Length: 201
Image 1 (cartoon, rainbow, N blue to C red):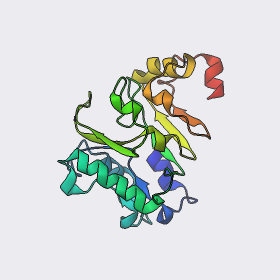
Image 2: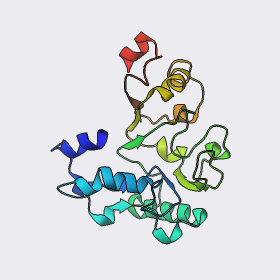
Image 3: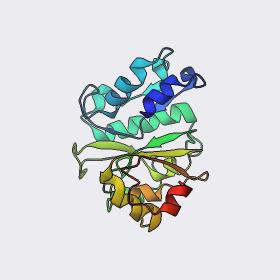
């Protein structure tokens, strides 16, 4: 897994990391749907030299029942690290993609795709459970120095063709930072891509 590769890389200095979540479900931090729980179990808890606790940024537990307040707090956390002037510029954003082409909690046809002012926003009508979530927005995603999509499984094969070959405007395909996007795709997910595109990737 990517987490295992990061843990094993001696060049990665985790003490310098600030770790934010590109999106999070508004559930308790130990809930099985929590992205923080997944990152904690697969990466943070296994590090020999940990990320300092103050540099890991989950949703505050007392706000998981209030998505609007959680999004406002998360924007404040970003401001505390990056400052209030200009859009935050992450060194790296790691993203996944759903079979419908969504990324973060930015879903096809959802009004949040048009958000161009807030860095963090929320939704209570996610088409994928749980319904309440917070998410980074395109202004932040598209300001990053590097964006990497990690995409696995045959359920992603059809949508990858639509995004990478046909250039259809699904949410994942709208991520376009200045340095471009890197796709890490396993064989099953890439099974329907044309050979010339696989070579490019």
